[in-house]
Amino acid sequence: MSKAWWGTAALAMLSLLAAGPAAGADKMLSLEQAVGLALKNNPTLEAARQEVAQAEGRVTQTTSRWWPQLSGDAGYTRNYSDRSRTSNYAGHYDYYEGELSLTQKIYDFGQTGGKVEASRQELSAVRHDLSTRRDEVVLSVKTSYFEVLKNQHLVRVATKTLESQQRHVEQAKGFYATGLRPKIDVARAAVDLANARLALISAQYRRREARVALERVMGVRPWRAKYELAPEKGLPPLPGKLDPLIVEAMDRRPETASLKAYIAASQGRLEAAQGGYWPSLDAGGSFGYGNTEFPLQNDWAAGVSLSWAIFSGFLTKGQVNEARAQILQRQAKLKDLELGISEEVEQAWLVVRESQERIEVARTALEAAKENFRLAQGRYENGVGDAIEFTDAQVARFQAASDLVRARYDYLQAYAALERALGRPMTASRVAMK
Image (tube, rainbow, N blue to C red; front, side, top):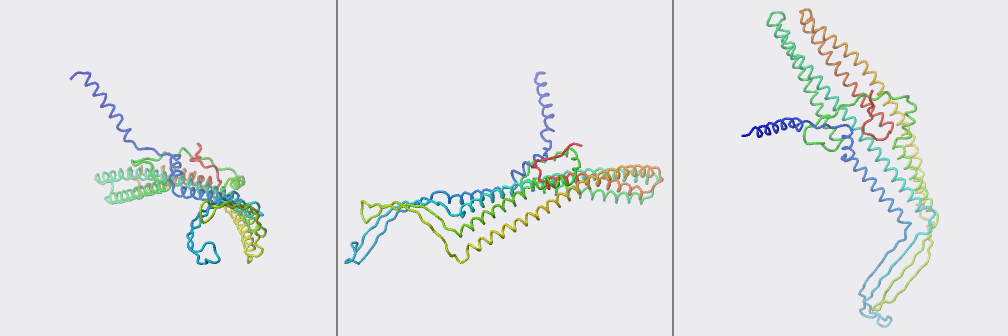
């Protein structure tokens, strides 16, 4: 074979080797992608969207009363009469008929207008409810996403601890073999190694559970192949003063807008109910054909009608009282909601600031734990310290590292909860660099 053929084959092999790792590399899921998948596939959002569609249908139904109502009828009957002396239709005869009727609502003192306004306000409320559900889903995605990342970091901490403990076991065996340490050090190191393995197994399963929870919120698994989550970009800055945040939440939260729309809907129902005390004016007309034989004869009619329920067994009074009570009930709910939003914002604000303080303390504790472990390890290797001192230092370092990881992701989750409490525009991530 020619040298050119071998050169071409070598280049092809190198290309395959270079492409192999990339082709088999894990896919990376960002927080923005996770939110997008949830907004598209979460079944509770689809249910909320269908509620909006139902409310739109109810608006169409109520507004239909303002439009002319056109109906048509056609019929054929086979009749029999034995009134031969008094009727021209004695015996069997056929009757054919057809008619078109048109009616138009002219005025009903707010009965129809109130119902239309109520349905429109309810549509607005349901749309705000959809926004509320979207914000809740976004918060769930963020919380689950950060939970997965937290457990991934805890797995890394547990893995490093296990590796350190494995080295300690080998070290203890070496010291025992040379007579520098008793056999109990080897046994204790083996116990510590087993505990480190248990900690790693627990961390791995917690990571798996967190990933399952994330996929449940997204409503779909992003890829069939293995994938990883993109790491967080940093910690967002501490929120500002509390009072302006509460004011912002009152203006932004879709729950308050929804309840205000429901109050307006109840006022529309009250207007419709009060219209029941007054008459309803309608216009109508009809045109038709009918006879026992062809050609059929035509007839028509047109006019206006005034209908008035003078007494309906206190039905209208009950409907008015119900609508008024519903308005008062929803106004009370709005006040309770505002109090709840204020409490929710303040609690989220406090949790964020507490998490920030925990991060600072955890950092300090981790540095101290690392130094303590370094000293304990040196003392053990020099024959001054004992196995208990070394183990305690190892456990303290592992705990401090885990506490820092938890504090960081508790901060991110708390900040996401604060954004939800503020009702800020729905974004995939507001992680700001620090």
